[in-house]
Length: 143
Image 1 (spheres, one colour):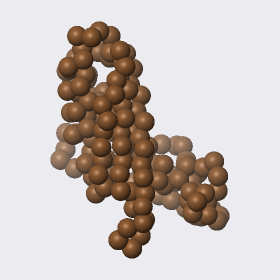
Image 2: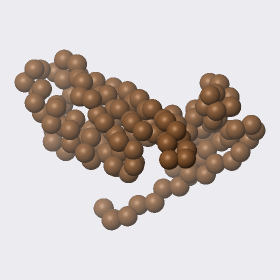
Image 3: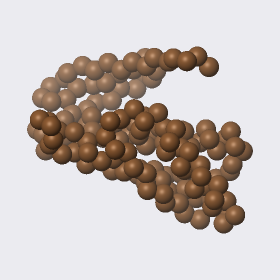
Image 4: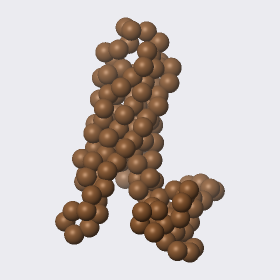
């Protein structure tokens, strides 16, 4: 695997405070808007939600890769991500991002490995590691 990879997304304004996002990696487009509290359209993806979605997606794919490499079987993984923005340093920014995975494992004997792999996924997730705001994972799994 090469030491560098590049990804690209393009966006186009459509109306108001929203637009469309595209990537060569997919045929799907994402229609987005600023959050309603900032004058955006309701019921659309927002950049803030997309950032949290990137954290969730990265955590899931990182955990799945670690589990596959370790030949660790699990029944399911759900990840909830919550972020808080505050006005600071002259503008709005995420001040906290909390990652709450719910991992379902087959047996109680898998508990220690589950907790270790969740911690590894937290440490290895490249999206979380790339953010300047604090990213916190709250371990939570279901048996």
